[in-house]
Figure 1 (tube, rainbow, N blue to C red):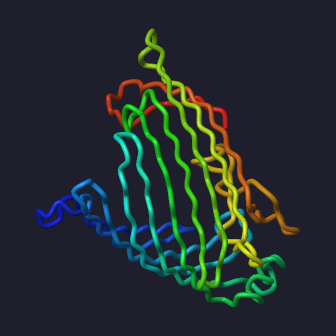
Figure 2: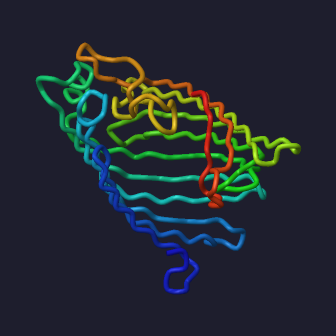
Length: 255
């Protein structure tokens, strides 16, 4: 609800009952927390992850937490996002089938961990539309850091660069270039938690492969993920024949 009780504030409830991810969250956002247009929000959430249905080495996590976040507009195109979250994660492994790195993590940190993480992101978006872009640039840089006194101390950095172009002579044809980089590691003498690894494959990264099916594997053939990822996409977008809905297009692509 974008204007809850006529206050101008936003209230959102998310219930996601997927096979691998189950998410329950409640969010409240004041889009004009300050006169300069700084937005402030609070999130309460629970997230259950079960990788048994994926190609990933099997594990289950239950994460509950609360966080505050801020959106700071810099210019018409530039925005900075800042968030602080306290999170508890309960981890369940198969003691007989889990990879050694998973078991080593539990032996070091136990089955329940606390994380105090900070998220910082910068975005510059000059695209002509959010739902049906045909031209412009999108640049996103994001950093997630697990800080003391939390049990998990790490960082995850990501970079996204996207470019769309529509030739003036062919206004129904749009070309899209997308590149993504990701790198993560532990801080100090602590390792990167394995459930913070990057994965590739499936819609959103490399289509034609099952979700999270690419990358290093263990001796059982299950994907372990990694601390770095590179994804590139080239697309040619055209309108869906016979459909005027501006949210749907056909695409020929190389991932």
